[in-house]
Image 1 (cartoon, rainbow, N blue to C red):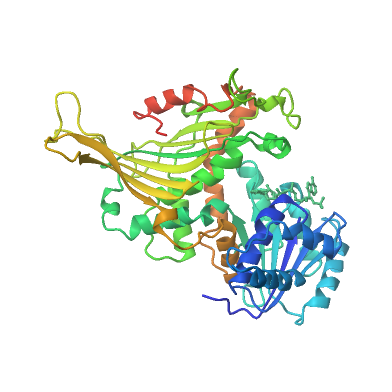
Image 2 (image 1 turned 45 degrees about the vertical axis):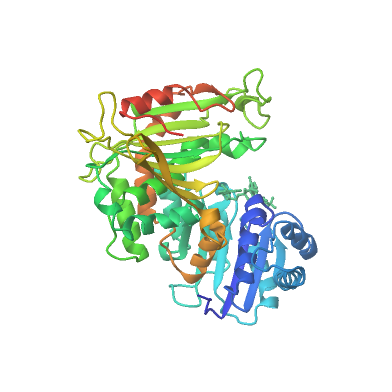
Length: 491
Ligand SMILES: NC(=O)c1ccc[n+]([C@@H]2O[C@H](COP(=O)([O-])OP(=O)(O)OC[C@H]3O[C@@H](n4cnc5c(N)ncnc54)[C@H](OP(=O)(O)O)[C@@H]3O)[C@@H](O)[C@H]2O)c1
């Protein structure tokens, strides 16, 4: 569906940064190439760095791709007309004058005085509120949600515990209403994550099985092979629970575990996600394993340990790995362990969900030693998006041997369509005012309640994470946590 908006002015605050260059401008270009953006479009980068329009354009061109406009000539033309709409203004983040100056610049390019305005705050959280207030003071924010509208997009981290998150929500709401605020968790824009509701609720077979009677455990894993690689400043302040588990993994958990929504409105979906997060017991130290990577073992390719990185303090206790055992106290999930784990510098890069069904009992194929393996549904978010369902099958031949095989839906071979980058989907939703893939304030509060008490315990007691070698599967103690849950981590 193409946009029916007449005018749009996008202001990317922090336009000199990594996120803007790698994700936001490429996503805007992808939408532009597919005619999702209105003809009257202005895109303005704002940051403190002094850049000319030309320098700014050449900086963002680096990451623009022709995925949607094959053909050298067509792509070059699209790129040229897109870049013509991109401008740059420099200024201080806390200065109303700087934003008034930005407004004067915008007036040169915007044919209408009342243009729909999208502010993307691609800046560190320490300056979120300064920028929001300056935007508000400069008179950029329209009242209400009707067109012309003003919307703001913010990126995690949304605070560092329940209180700081509430404060951020409260302070930001003085400038942008909750309806005007779009909190991005880019995992919600990923294709396979968006498919979770379809998989669960558009297939007759899954919903009756999606309960404690049939499901033995749920695992949600996020693993990265890289360490902090010289970008330890931000990470060291937050650690893996705040950076990945409390947001990305809890968002995935809420989609896996929520009750069926009675319709697809964003309010209903967010209400159901909030409800299941509120039913999730806060995590305690007994159900948590924390790790920090150390250098790679002798004989393996050399890699520094976390605290050897020059951007990390030598005595840092920040966790680069966490495994947590969660319980959801509602009739559907009572007694089913939800195991979440996330780690840097591990042996693989993956994000996946594993739903393991109960073992067979007294089945006709159970022998004196064992029954067939339990079924497992594996949903791989990245890399190589896939959905696999592990079944027991007869080995072709004259005997009755059985083996475990996968019904295997690999996206790259099953679909000819391009898989959009998460930011393309999410930005289009912001422009269209669709909020189901964004995190509401109540959902955010419920997610913080699950981890805030244990984060305070860790911080106050200076809990020392367990060492694990770079390139390993993480601390061995995480295996014990899975055993305690009556299962095992599956790769
Ligand atoms: N990069 C990612 O993939 C990613 C993923 C998820 C979330 N995020 C979040 O998205 C936001 C932007 O990420 P990013 O990676 O683009 O950040 P970044 O490159 O570190 O910062 C963006 C811009 O903000 C300005 N800036 C940096 N440090 C500052 C400071 N201490 N005080 C004031 N201004 C500062 C710099 O611009 P000037 O010096 O020119 O003003 C910089 O170019 C952050 O909130 C981050 O947590 C990023």
